[in-house]
Length: 146
Image (tube, rainbow, N blue to C red; front, top):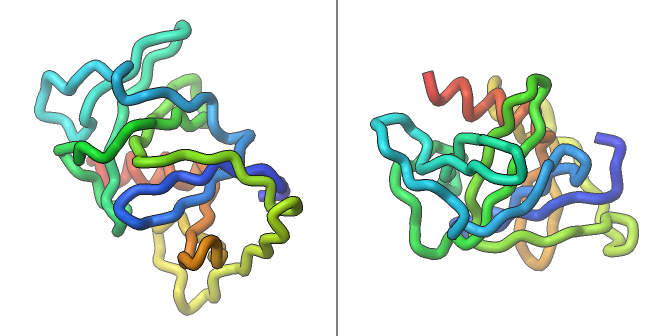
């Protein structure tokens, strides 16, 4: 993660930063097609020539099958394959770490949990925030989806 530009997702009082170049786009929840099956995704996005399953996470980064009414946006994460994956959130912001004078700290090894995508922490707007890369987050969600 050698970037200064991040997308901040806010949901369930969780602040999650993802490098901006790992996000395909930001969309509004109204553009979701609701889930019609028993899978863990809450819906799918079909638009702009793209198609992606959309997931809802809680503050522990566990998949939720029902989306809270507070969720207004979703991001589409790039993956190593052509398939995208989306995550809903209450708020989304563009953040320039240098301009905001923010200094992420590497998560101590003792606090790292195998499979959990969080590798850095940051104190932002009086909140302990997590930083992860998009590919690690996609792998994490796919692992929960088995």
